[in-house]
Image 1: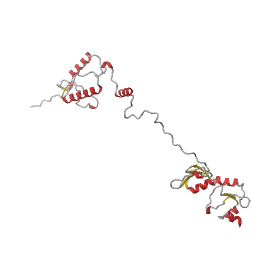
Image 2: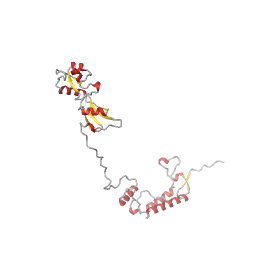
Image 3: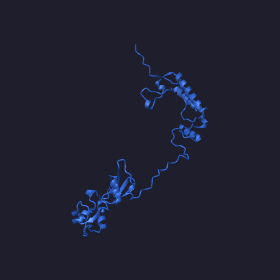
Image 4: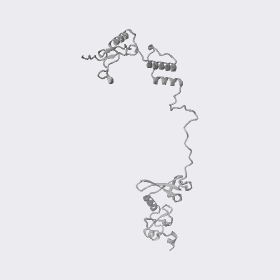
Length: 267
């Protein structure tokens, strides 16, 4: 006996009749495989086209298919959707004559415009007269540049000193309060704020200032001098400040060394 091979067939999704694949259209796109076909057979398609020609024009361009019988599960889902939408809106669905329904962003805008509120996630808040921009904290008066008593040390007891090098490069370092007070009182620095002082001269500028001030005359012998000497030696606590430095000749500078002025002049 020879087996009879039946042609491939498919059940129509609308009339539920088993018909050969030639009655169905091929699928296109991602679902287009070898034996994939659309759900409506040829007769159902003709009924759809005839119904679309006889019916009045609809807002949507896609023709309506014959009603597909629903399974029990699908019918329950549709009833639940209808009940939810009816409870939320409280009105019937607008007809085709009323035009297209507004999209979700448009409905949200209309709701915001009617209520005047911006929703829970909006960052804009109504401004009131009391909630204004906070004013900056009022600081005290700026201290006098020559007032060393206005300096307040940090927690480590240090004061920030800044200045510039001979080439104009800025530098800064921390010094103790006693040294900062001495530099300000002897006119080598000025007070910027209560925690900072600024050195007035670089090394090159300081040398030119002292020699010009003393007119290149030695402070000890009265002859020509081109060096700088400390009245209170650095070895005994003196600092390089305008009040502690004078012009001196090379001989007096080397002879005095680390002696006090009284010792050097009284011998």
